[in-house]
Amino acid sequence: MTIAQRMYILIFSAFAGLVGLALLAAFQMQRVFTAADYVSVNVVPSILSLNKVITDFGNMRAATWQVVSVRDPDAREALKKEREASYRKAMDELHRYEKQYVTDDKDRQQLQADLRAVDAYKALSDKILGLALQAKEDEAAAELLANRQVVVDLVAALQSHNQYNVDIASRSADEATSLLARARWEAMSIALLVILVVAAQGLLTTRRLVKSLREAGTIAETVAAGDLRMHIEVTSRDEIGKLLQALKNMNDGLVRIVGQVRQGTETITSATAEIAEGNMDLSTRTESQASSLEETAASMEELYSTVKHSNDNARQANQLAQSASALAIKGGEVVSQVVETMSGINASSREIASIIGTIDSIAFQTNILALNAAVEAARAGEQGRGFAVVATEVRNLAHRSATAAKEIKLLIDDSVSKVAAGSRLVGEAGATMSEVVVGINRVHDIVAEISSASNEQLAGIGQVNEAVVAMDSATQQNAALVEEAAAAAKALQDQTVKLNEVVNVFKLDAASSSSPSSSQSLPPVRPAKAAPRAPQAPAAPAARRPALALVPPVRGGAKEVEEWVTF
Image (cartoon, rainbow, N blue to C red; front, side, top):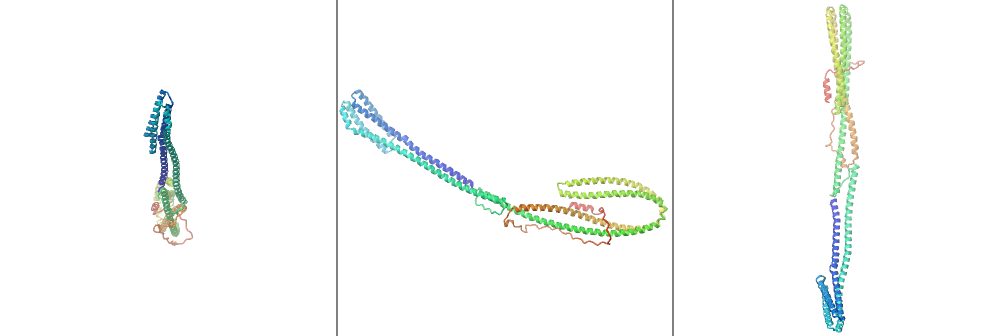
C-alpha cells in the first residue's frame, strides 16, 4: 500500500467519522425535535383545549347556580343563554379535540368518559333550569345538591383527562432530555473513536514514513561517505520503496562505474609499462647512436692517414717544384700578373665561399627551425603559438639568404671580368710555360697521386657526412621521443594519482572490487628492440683525433626531413 493510499485512508477515515458524527447528531436532533414537536403540536394544544373545556363547563355550572338563585326573569334568560353558549363552546372544543388532538386509545377512552360526564351534567342542568323557570327554586336547589356527584364526576373526568395530557408532555420532555443526553454521549464516543482511529493511523503512517526516510537517509549518507558495500533490500512498493529502489539503482550504478574506473587505472598501469618499453627502445637507439659515433671515429682515423700521405706527396711535389722553378723564371713576370689576377679571383672566391657558407648555415638553421616548427605544431595541435615564432625566424633567415644571393651575383660578375683578363695573360704566358712542360709533367704525376689521395679523402669525408646525418636524425628522433615520453609519463602519472585518489574514496565488496579477468585486460604492446651494431675497429690508430667539422648533408637529407615530419 502506497503512502498516498494510506493518507487517503486516513483522510477518508476522518471524513467518515465526521460524517457519521454529523449524521448521528442530525438523527438524534431529529428525534429530539420530533418529541418536542409532538409536545408542542399535539400535547400542549390538547392541554389548552381541555383547559378551555374545563373553563367553559365552569362557566356553565356558574350560570346554572345563578339561574337557581336569581329571581329576575330577564336575568335568568340571560344566564340561560350564557349557559347555552358555554355548553356549545365546550362541546365544540371537545369535538375539535376528538378530531385533532386524540393521541391514543386511552386518550380516546378518556374523551368518551368526558362526553358521558358532560351528557349527564347537561341533563341535570336542563332539569334544574326547567325547575328554576317554573319558579321551583327550592326543588331546583335540592335537585342540584342531590346530584352533586354528577358535577364531581364531570370535574374529575376533565381533570383526569387533562392530567393524562400533562403526563404525556412530561414523558415527552423526559424522553427529549434522555435523547439529548444519549446524543451527547454518542457524539462524544464517536468523536473519541474517530480521534483514536485517525491518531492511530496517523502515528503508524508517520512512524513507517519516518523509519523509511531514516533508512533512505542512512543509505544516502553511506553512499556519500564512499561506502558502496551496503546491500539495499526493497520490501515495499510505495513511494519510499520507489525511493529505496532508486537509491539501490544509484548504488549499483556507482559500483559499476567505480569498478570500470579501477579497471581503467589498471589499463593506465599497462600503458605505463608500454612507456617503459618505449624508454628501453630509446635506450637501444642511444646505443645504436654510440655505434654510429664509433664508426664515424674510425672513418676519421682513416681520413687522417690519407691526409698524412697526401702531405708526404705534397712535400715531394715541393722539391720537384723547386727544381722546376728555374724553368719557370721566364714566365715569372707573366705568372706574377696571372698570380695577381688569380689573387683577386681567389679573394672573390673566398668571399663567395664565405657567402656560400653563410647561405649554407642559414639553410641548415632554416631546416632545424622548420623541424622545430613541425615539432611545436605537432605538440600544440590547434594552439600553434610556437609555430608562429618559428615561422618568423624562418622568414628572417630567408631574407638573409636573398641578400647573400644578391652579393654572390655581384661577385660572380666581377670574377667573370677578372677571369677574362687572366685568360689573356695566361695566353701571353703560354709560350713561356711550354718550356716548363717537362717539369710540369713530373709535377703532374705527383699531383695525380695527390688527386688520388684527395679522392680517398673525399670518400672518407662522405662516410663521415652520412654518419653525421644518421646521427643527427637519430638524435632528433630521440630528443622528440624523450620529450613526448616525459610529457606523457608526467600527465599519465598525474592522472593516475588523481584517479587513485578518487577511486580509493569508494569502498567496494570483494566481488565488485576484484580485478578484471585476463580475457578483458589488454596486453601491453612491446615495441621491437633494434639490435645494437658492434662498433668497427679503426683502420689505423692515431695519436690524436681531429675535431669534427659540421658538413652539410650530401645524400638523403630531404628524405630524412620528410620522414621526421611524417613522424
